[in-house]
Image (cartoon, rainbow, N blue to C red; front, side):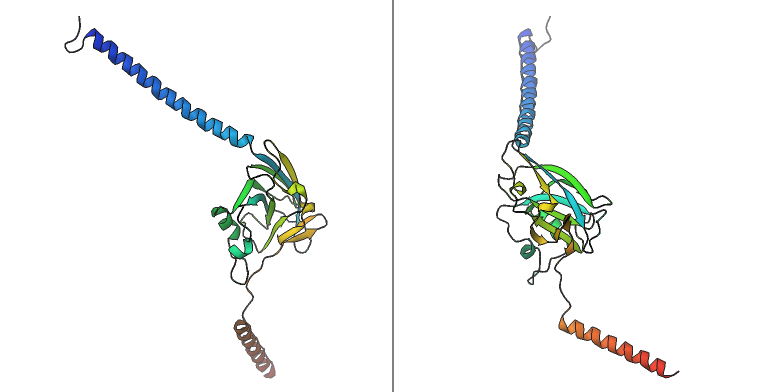
Length: 226
């Protein structure tokens, strides 16, 4: 016996249509997952592993504890960090590193690392930058990435270039750094240096001089009363 308006043939057709529809949805979802997975696997397979390690020292030569170090690459057409993130006098603006990352001009490799109490660091990450792209090392006094002393260094050593892919790898050693935009070399690693910053104008210096002279004069007047 069949329900009015629903013949056995209609019921069978509806069931078949329902099954086919569910099968198509599941097949589409599976295809999307496979494409996403294959894309990620392809990216990892063509990426190179970059390891970086060494020691960071302060201007006075003492090890930097709690400093932040990160390696990475600049965009292919980007070639002037201070000129882009500094003023007309090439004084580095506050937040330059974070802006460079946000603008897509600097690509960090891995999450970076914190220096130990004796100033050592060791970290790694992957990059899919073109083979031969120069590798750079940033270092800061702390995790803020905006400290008063910084390091931005690379090296003429071929190890400081993105290696052949897939599955290439290289190791950056701080002692090999010999190209410095910020910071300086150290016998046992790299050393932080004060970033370029605006010097007080001549007017500001003259005002400070007047206040200093006035304070000295008032002090002499007070002493002369005794």
